[in-house]
Amino acid sequence: MQHHSHHQLQDGSFSQWIPLLVIAAIALIYLLALFTLKKKNTTWPPRRTASFLTGVSLLAVALWPSLMQWAHQDLRGHMVQHLLLGMFAPLFLVLGAPITLALKTLPVKAARSLTSLLRTKAFYLLSHPVTAFILNIGGMYLLYLTPLYVKSLGNPSVHYLVHIHFLAAGYLFTWSMIGPDPAPKRPSFLLRVAVLLTSIAFHAFLSKFMYAYLYPLHSPHSENQIREAAKLMYYWGDLSELLLAIALFTIWYRQRAPRFGSPAQSRSQRHGYVE
Image 1 (cartoon, helix red, strand yellow):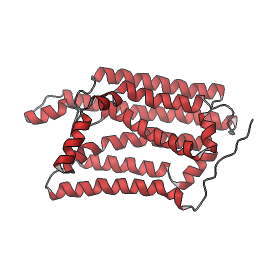
Image 2 (tube, helix red, strand yellow):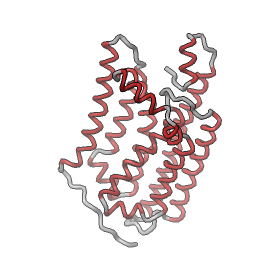
Image 3 (tube, helix red, strand yellow):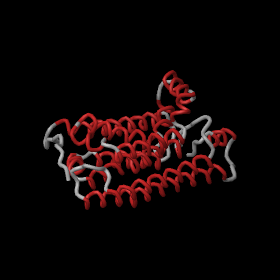
């Protein structure tokens, strides 16, 4: 098996704590927005806050220096990090409804600008389940079935761009499935179910292919590491997708349930926002 040089993740360097500082800042902004709502005597579901902070915590675990070091040296650690960044954290972050919170707390002009952005054709196409599926699953196939993964081991820029893509694509895909934020022209429930089932199938196939044919090829990892990493992708990926499916069907059920609320509440439900 070929050996490749790894760029070093220096223990004790300040740069390794930068991602955690960014995550802490995101959590602080969310909490400050909640404080603003409280001053306005506006309620916010506690489960939204709990969900978002859970997602932030999972991001912190994924980018903790010791896990970063393990992920850089061992494909099993890399896969744990991939699952946290691209699948589990996005689920909880999306359910925290940060866009809705922003719309409730931003100044009127800024909130209108954000609403206008959400209504653009470009955003609709980018956040469409099919587009999000291609960016999410396509990125995984590109990373593990091409030399890109091996290149990331020796190139810090590629290494961090992979992390950013995992998180961004995972968040976008999850939001396209279950985003509780107001979203005009949200695709139909049946389309979202079809895309989710397709994603589950493609994810399972990739993990089995990696297990059988020892992808990524020419990596410095042992056969045992690769197969264990593929199993992590298969089983823990299944769990994440099951949670996503439960959330999708729960939201659909609550939207289909008899509506005894106000007409305004019914309109908000039709647009995809469920308190």
